[in-house]
Amino acid sequence: MDICIKDECTGCTACYNTCPHSAISFKEDDRGFLYPCIDETRCVDCGLCRKVCPNNTPVSRSEEQEAFVATAKSIEEQRTSTSGGMASVLSRYIIRQGGIVYGCTGEECTNIHHVRISSEDEISRIKGSKYVQSNLGLCFGAIKKDLQQGITVLFVGTPCQCAGLRSYLQKDYDNLYVVDFVCHGVPSQKILGDAIRYNVKSDNLNGIEVQFRYRKGDNERSVYGLRLIKDDGVVYQKDWPENDYITGFLRGVFYRESCYSCKYATPKRISDITLGDFWDMKKERSISKDALGLSSVICNTEKGKIIIGDIDDMLNAESITIDSLIQCNRQMRAPFPQPTSYALFNSTYITRGYLNASHKILKGEMKKTKKSIWISRITSQIKKYFPFLRR
Image (cartoon, rainbow, N blue to C red; front, side):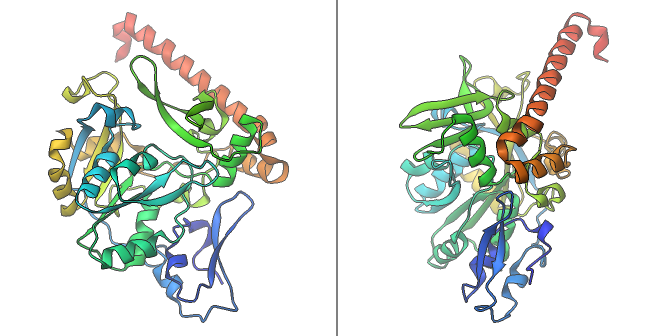
């Protein structure tokens, strides 16, 4: 018995957290993506899993209300974040109010998962972008328990994870704040683990932290790449487009099947606040001058507007039209299109492993990316010296 159509399943865990008979577990498919599996000996066919699945019972959405370009006032907050540090600022505020934050950690590269944090010292655990699907486990049940005890909770996750939480809870709570981010799509933990083993030439990945965005250079700009850290030392680092995994991610080669038909890649959001990167390469905005990075912030609910107002003294913000943010974020308009290399990568990966799939497909994608960057730079230089070509 399927809970929903398999290709639509996002792995949000709403069904897993809901089942009162522990009849649901998650099993990996050939590419490492987790899907619910029902133990028929425990199942009493109560239908709760199908009812709570957001694919079967769509979650209500909010119309966007206000939008900002923002960055943390604290330079250290910016420096240790991948864009403007907005998720960290929100987390810090909630914890100072005595609340709890649930977010994703990359401190164990073979187990990217959501954790519950309750102190400012722990915020570093959930900083940074994670370009892989996070394991939520039994988070939703823990969140519900916190909420029922009157504890303020901030949950930060992908749009589909936020939809799963909303559907699981079945109602809104005044003490719950839900934050999603503009999402491209998610690879599996298995693909990431295989990619790391391939790059470090080792099967021993214990104690290795993974980062997909980090700051480097005199201007401390945030770059895409794959950086592995152990005992506070960098054991591997390759920037995009020199690394196969990050190139495959940005090219959309190995996302979960549901990502290519994502129901949440739309201006109508599930969350109270939607966060994303904001690129101001020409420093046209006043707050760009001294900022290491900028975030786009969209308040989707009145609750979202209120909390952004509450943290006003912790950030620099500038109003922007919502339409302009939507136009510069493709994933707020439509899902990431499935690339032509998708089927070949997956068939090769399943039958011959990551090494062969990387050499056969990802090396080609890296070459395409480098060529595209080279052409873009040449074109930019030509237009710089021949202004009449800019039209």
